[in-house]
Length: 88
Image (spheres, one colour):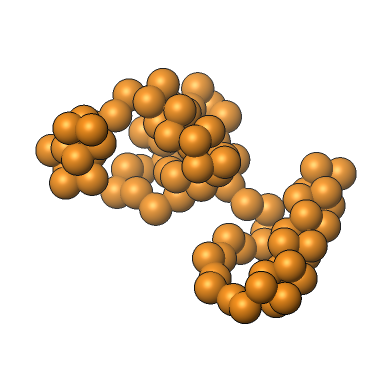
């Protein structure tokens, strides 16, 4: 618990292994956690072993609070978008 507190307060830096575990726990791709960072692209590529992948052009990640029926629709859209991205 103390480590998580230190992370959120900027008193500690997680290893890539810890970042991967956090991404897994959040059901979020690791690059999504790294999209908003003060690190330059070269540093990010070094951290990810050259496997840095952002979203394809024309896509963007959003976070929303919606009524249940609209959230259902948004999840369907997200599922379709993920399938389309896998095809490309």
